[in-house]
Length: 255
Image (tube, rainbow, N blue to C red; front, side, top):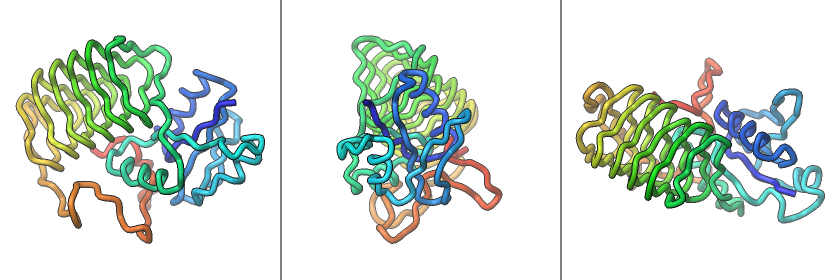
């Protein structure tokens, strides 16, 4: 019996659940969301539990047939790289471990690709020769050229394109339809806007770029301590998906 924990309960997390169901209708998967207070999600008439307190004893008993080793592995459901890093740190502290990256049906993977753990690759993505994907990488219907390198926590939006010998630092977000020119490097925690064309190296970490050609729109936001997305202290609430007062789901696309 295969069990899995999906980090987050936002829209892209629900998309991930349907990919898992298509791969294996017998899989038992649950969400984890310690912010919104939801206890379950209705997915096509199926009530899927949402764990709110990082205690999986209940679902191990009810869905895992009492197996203490069930629901120990996780994948990232959300798309925002900063949120992914925060919640992955929580999952690791809760004793979970990253599962092999999930690859949907209809994905082309060259045999020489190297893929990390804890990520999610959605349908119709394509990866050619000698590509390296880090851990906790999310790919939505994107295309990658030969020898591309993608760091941990990156997210590639739908219809984005990484050409040959490109390199993304940790936590880069590529907006839908964005294109990165061959042999171009993007520094860690950079956000690339929708339909942007990145034609030269981006060396400053944590900035937002957009346009054709892409230019810096706003500088890196001030951060406490080192790193662009350092996890907050344990007593600081950290949303899995950014739910604003209007109830909008911002777990997918930060720009």
